[in-house]
Amino acid sequence: MLQEELFNSVLKEEVYKYGEIRSFPSETVILNPHSYIKVIPIVLSGSIKVMETDEETQEILLYYIKPGESCIMSFLAGIRNETSKVKAVIEEDAEVLLVPVEKASVWTRQFPEWADYIFSLYQKRFEELLEVVNAVAFRKLDARLLHLLKQKSTLFKSDTIPVTHQQLADELATQREVVSRLLKQMEKEGIVSLSRNKISLL
Image (cartoon, rainbow, N blue to C red; front, side, top):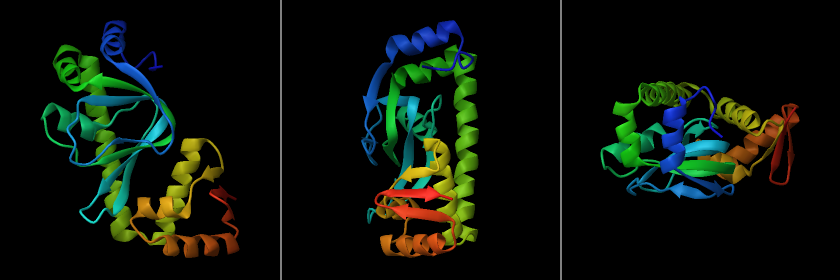
């Protein structure tokens, strides 16, 4: 459910009246690049990862959408009737409120709380994208890998993370062999413990 303090009762009533609640299992792709956006997702539980994909299908993680949050890039593309520039994938089993894009646009003018919500998301995502740029430009891959593992640990609220080496490689825009080599080195250093499709932070 939406946080009580997020919207006033009138806006919340509108959101639930026109929105559709759907459940998605992990790894479900809910948005592909170059597709038109008809609905804006608001995460009620679980999480969504937003990726950028180039023409050669190489991907890099941009940010996570957590409970109470939405995808500002979907919102901006939707209200402009432009195609998506990102790919959105369910990170962990999620319940999502899908809001029609035309309503999301109207609410921006009708409800100050909704406009504040959208602008706060814009600021948050902008800061996260700056962090991605800084990480790619200035951090070594091992530091980026450890940061990503810590992000996932926070998302799953557990030190044991259900993830494959290939998934990590995709999100870091590198090769699986590179990630595997770094993880083995981190295991030797006592930073992580590796098991099949799971990594534990020590």
